[in-house]
Structure formats: C-alpha cells, structure tokens
Length: 276
Image (tube, rainbow, N blue to C red; front, side):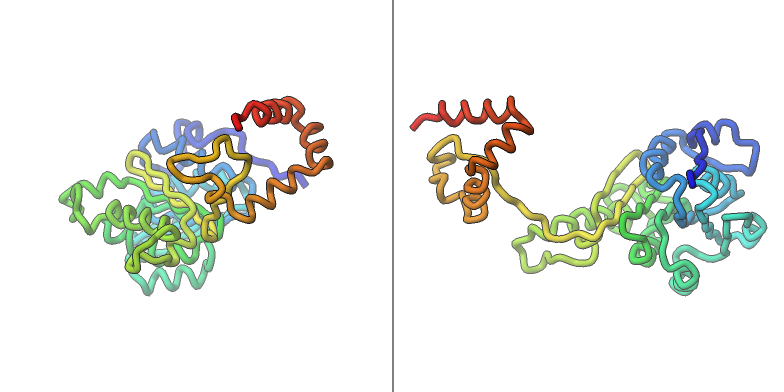
C-alpha cells in the first residue's frame, strides 16, 4: 500500500499555521527539512523536549505523517491537555534522572530527539547523556537555541567549560579516539556511536550509527619508485599486492574495459608512459 505523505514543507506549514502557537527561528527550517526528510511516512517515534503551546507537536506530526508518534515533555502541567491522535505529552523535568528513566521505560527507543527545552546547558547535557543510549541506530539528536550557551543569565558564556558547546567539543575528540596514540585518550561509547556532528547557527545535529574502527587501504600502481624519501615498495602491504595481482588477470582487464573503456585505456597509457 502506498503511504500518503504531506506535500508541503515545514516552512509552508509554519507560515500558514492557524493552529497552536509555536516560536521558531526561520533559519532552522532548512535544517529540519534536511535531517527529518528520511523519516517522513515511516512509523517513527520523535521526542520533543519543551512543548510550550504545542504548535510544533502538531507540525512534526503533520510533517512526519500519520504513522509517526510524537512524544512531548515539559515541566508545565497543563501541557497534558495537548495530547491528540499520534501525540503523547508527559510532564517532567528534562534534567531529572528519575523522570527520564520513566520516559525511556515507556518509550525505550526514539528515532528523533529534539531538545527545545530549558536551554540551560546543564539540562541539555543531562538530557543527551541519558537519552543517547535510547536513540535508535541511524537516529538524529537535535539541540537548538544553543546561543543560550553564550549568555551569562543561563550560567554560561564563551569559553566556559560547563556549556553544552564545550561538552560537544569533547565529543568531537571522542569521535577520533580510534586514531589515538595516547594512553589517556581511549575509545568509549561516544566513539562507537557518534557518526557525525553538524554545527549550525544555534543548532547542533548529532547522528548516531554503530561504528567500527576506520579502515585505510591503498589501491592502484605507484607512479614513482620513491616518494617523500621513502621507497614505494615499503608502502605496499600484502593486501595491496594481492589487489594488484587480482586486477592483472585477463578476465579482470576485460571486465574493466567493458565497464569503463575510456578510463581503462587512459590508465594503461599512463603505465606505459611511466619512467623506468
């Protein structure tokens, strides 16, 4: 059965909204569109931290489609009145471990998390630490209004170590721990699960994918006998030699010629022109 999807984008919905109130920076909409696009029409679960008047809950449900479930959390008790078909609303504090435990017991996995809650850095950090293990593989975690991390009124400021931005810099380090040569810089769960971190004006998007240690390999034939003062043969490992040997068979050459005749002939000419 073909899934019917809304044909209008989020900005169109926002500009024509006559439903519940919402408040958004306009440059957020292309970011939303980019990272939510893969989830449209699918049976996904999205968590929004910070409900306010509930307008964005309605927008996410409209955008993602009728198979989606939108869960909103807020400290304001009246938000429970905003529940509707496909929209669930719970009352609690995003920094409260007990409440977050109750939330994740009810919803063990989220495909999308959007933090538009208190905007306090300590709350943003507490939420992602608790919720990240409950983000599905391939999911996205969006934290917005990060300009609050530069405001003294929010217990923050540029260069302050307790901000979400500073915490995020540490996660960028963690992403590279597979390459570490230092005993005190080792692979951890963040290393194994953060696939990418995207930073925009006031918005961070973290993508979750189960990662394996990166693999580097070589292919192709050397152009020179030595480069950067090193003999090229010392740079070719057994796997590379086996790859070159497999490409030298008549069958492999014919297969490449059929698939990429121009490129195959150009590479052959380059080999013939290589100085000896």
